[in-house]
Length: 120
Image 1 (spheres, helix red, strand yellow):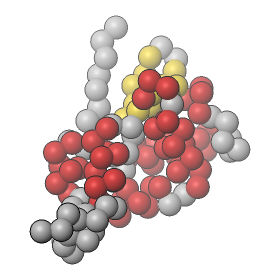
Image 2 (tube, rainbow, N blue to C red):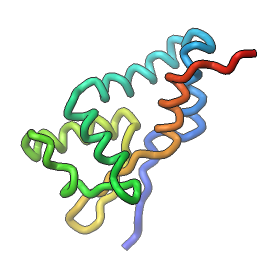
Image 3 (cartoon, helix red, strand yellow):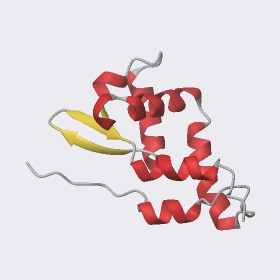
Image 4 (cartoon, rainbow, N blue to C red):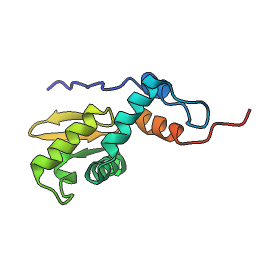
């Protein structure tokens, strides 16, 4: 079985797109890319799914382990798709199950965006 990695956002592009908000104003393009992430996380179910994946042991979670969030399985799939499209999650099919992971560069870029820029 071969594994195919699906690069949704290049780590360099993600880090470059999100300077700390206190460093300088975002360009229109940076704001557009960043808004996609926050829009995806603006839904409580998506935020919970993202948190479940990010905090899961080993850094990845099988959909079977994170499906119990109070909505139907098709709705979980919809929300996971939206998180993938926003570049927040990557996925890999293994047999009948799909495993999700948050790329470390995504978490680092999100953290950097919300931190205060270092004083000069």
